[in-house]
Picture 1: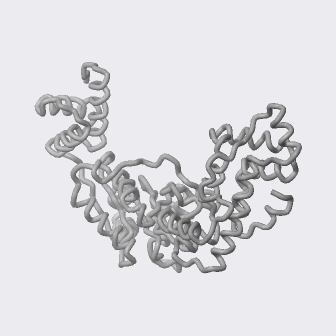
Picture 2: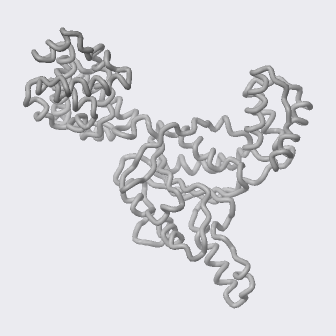
Picture 3: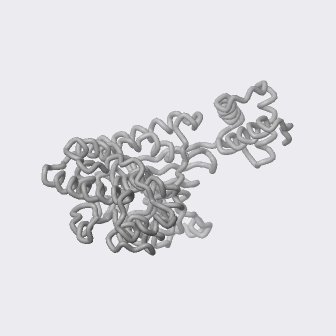
Amino acid sequence: MSAFESKKLILLRGVLRDDAVRHFVNAVEKDDISEYAQAYELLLQENMQNRFGEYLTHILLRDDNLFARRAFAGETDKDVRAAFLHDLHIFAELAAKADDLPERLAQEIGKGFPKIRRGKAGILQTRSGNGTAARLAEYYRKNGYGIFIGNKAFTYENGALQPVKNTPEVSLRDLKDYEDEKRAIGRNIVSFLDGLPYSNMLLYGDKGTGKSSTIHAMLNEYADRGLRAVELPKEQVKEINAVKAVLSALPFHFLIFIDDLSLEENDEKVTALKAGLEGSMNEKSRNVMIVATSNRRHILKENFSDRDNSVHARDTMEEQLSLSDRFGLTVCFSSTGKKEYLSIVRQLADDAGITIPEEELAVLAERWAISKGGRSPRRAKQFVDYVRACTAKGLEIEI
């Protein structure tokens, strides 16, 4: 790659921000063994030192650029495609340089310095054409672009989205019972994705009843339709309108997810959340839904002094209700009784292939619930996981 080629990039300059790519570019442009060594170290960490073409393709596919964004929206034109193919050709030449190094680098390799190899070129063919552009456009339409490829959940830090790795892989099938609750939430999310009227949601109920897991499962269920989530800790609730402003400009549908929400009456975050839900210049966005979970229906903590002062009791109650009432859909996850708890245990045990007789399983499950302080779907899952581990290791189930 000649010294000026990387400067001719039009759309894919962001690929050069990757450290391994940047050091390799510097190495071949400057014929510099120090830069080459740094590139080799970084590729070695990823076990890609013999597959530079694949590594470069991986970075390129996840670059946030105009072609990828327009392809996702189905709006590419010939000029954008031409610019993208121009850049793709430059990176194809870069990949080829792995097996055709400048003079001084080639001499060092000849003396025994470890070599970066191109491996399979993939899309980085020197004669990439409209067929390649069409295939990549389809890839972006299906998978999104930039940080949204392979990432469904994000946090909001310093004014930007940051991907959350290893999000829960729970599915709706994994969550037993609570069918009415899941149906109501699912229908609202489908309306949201279809561009129909939808409601912000409050999921409340006892701990361990599956409120958060249901949202994780919905995210996994509808991610291929462009659903994404931004988890906002309650400490960041005052930034909710800033987050909405960032998300409203993106071509995805986002859940702003506030887990385990509870606030004090005079907390400044109450005002911010109310404004985020309704009642400010920030109207409800077509592509942002606010979803909160809480152990209490009214979110705001109630003080005994609120009850004692009868003059202000009604005003206080209305203030406490005004926040939760701004969620258009409120779903209660009620606590599980013995019958419901054992039903969930039995279903989870069947999924796990546990063959303990039903009566024995019920006795063990009840003993588990008593020892752990109560019945809930979470306790049921923990119990079945414990039994499964004991069975796999051939150990006696001791509770």
